[in-house]
View 1 (spheres, rainbow, N blue to C red):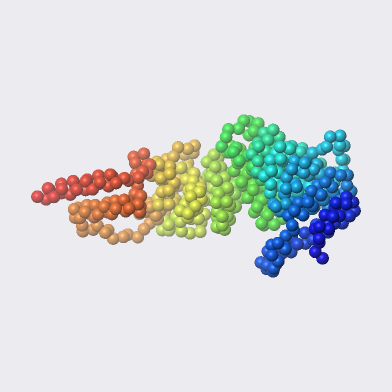
View 2: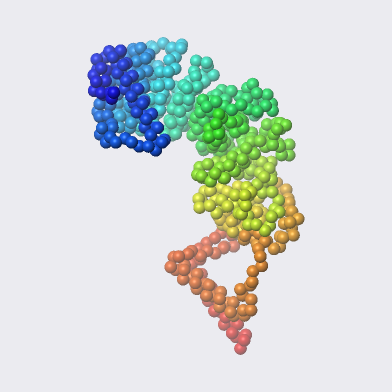
Length: 567
C-alpha cells in the first residue's frame, strides 16, 4: 500500500521513538523498493511508468519537513535502531538535489559528522566499541551531500572533515574498523579532494597524505617487504601465483589510488628531495605490486590497473626505477639481467586498450605516457621496449601503418583524428628511436612522422638533444639490400612509376611549375588552403601572397634567360 507522507510526518511530530521508527522504516522500505524497480526497468529498457511527474514525486515541502524532523530526532538520545532509521531516511532524501535544504546547514552537517564519528562533542566519552552500522550510514549521507551540494562542500572544508578522516585512516590496521567503514571514509575523502583544492592541499601537506595513504594501501592489500623497494604478498612464497584480491579489498584500494592521484597530480615533473624521493619510491613499489595483481573479476582488474597506471604517471620520473628493481625470478620477464615484469605488463595493458579502440584518450594515454617517460629516463626500459615494439626491420614491402604488429598499430595512431592521441603515439616511437630523425623516419615513414617533426622544427632532419646511449641501430640483411629503393615518405619499397616529365623540355617543365605556383596562389587567396614553407631552422611558416609573386618573377626571369640562349 502506498505510504502517506503526511501520516509519517504526523507520527514524527509526536516525538515518540517507537511510532517514528515504524513510520521511517515503512518510508525507507518503500523508497528502497521503488528505487530497485526503477533500476531493473532501466537495465531491461522496459519503461512502463505511466504516472505523470506530479503524481510520481512527493511534495517537496513535505520532504523538507520530514528532513527537518529527522535531524531534530538525531539530536536526541535515541535507541540505535531509531538512529539508523533516521540516517537511512536522510540518505534517501539527500539523493534528490531538490531536497537538500534541511541538510545543507552547518548544524545539520555537524550532526551527520558526529554520527559518522568524525567529530566529538565536548565532554563526550569516547566509545570503545563504535556502532559501525550507524557510522557507515552517516558516511553515506555525507557522501551524498558533498556530491550534490556546493554549500555542503564548503562546510565540509570549513569543518575540517578531512582531519577526522585522516585520524581514522591512521587506525586502519585496528580490528575495530571493518572494510565497509574504510571504503566510505575513502569515498568521502576522494570527493572532498576532487571538489576542493584547499582540502587537497591540506591532506597533502599538513596531514602528510602520501605517507598516510601509502600506509593505508599497504594495510589494505596485506603486503610485506622482503627488501626496501620490493613488495610481496604476506603468506605467498616466491614464485607462487598471487591469489586475486577480494571485491571489498579492491574497491578500497581503488579509492586510495584515486585520492593519491588527486593530491599528486603536479609532482611528476618537479624536483623532490631525498626524503620525498624515498616516499614516492615506497609508494611506487606498492603500485608495482598492484600492477602485477588481479581482482576478483576481469572488469574490476581492468579498472584496478587503470587507476594504478594513472597514479604511476604522477610519480617523479626518477622514482619510476622501482618498476625494474625487484630481483629476477624464474618466471620473470628478464632483459639484460633486469626484471621487466612490470614494464611488460604495462605494454600488454597498452596494447589491449589499443585493440579495444574505445575512448583512446582516456584509456590509452596514461599507460602510453608512462612508457614514454620510463623509456626516456631509463636506458634498460627503452631498449627492452624497442626490442618489443621496433624490432629490426625485415618487411620492407609493406607500409609501416599496415599490419597487426604493435609498431603498425602505433604508426596508425600517428594520423589519428585526436591530436593528443597522435602526438603521444608519435612521441613514444620517437623516444624509442632515441629522438633520431633518420631512425624515426625509417620505422614510420616521413609522411607519418611529419606532424611530430614539424612541431619540433626537425623537418630538415637532425637529432633532438637527449640523454641516450650510443648503441647502434642494427640493420637486417633484408633492409640493407632494399635501403636504396625504399621511399622515405611511405617507408616501403614502391613499384617503379613512369616519369610524368619524361620527354619534356626544360621550358615545358618550368611552364608546368609556374602553372602549379599560380594554382596554389589562387587557392591560398581564396582561403581554401594554407601553403607552408620550410625555414632554414627546420620550422614551418606560412607562404604569403608576396612569396608567390617572387616565385612568379623568378620563373619569368628563368624563362627569359632560356629564350635569350635560344636566340
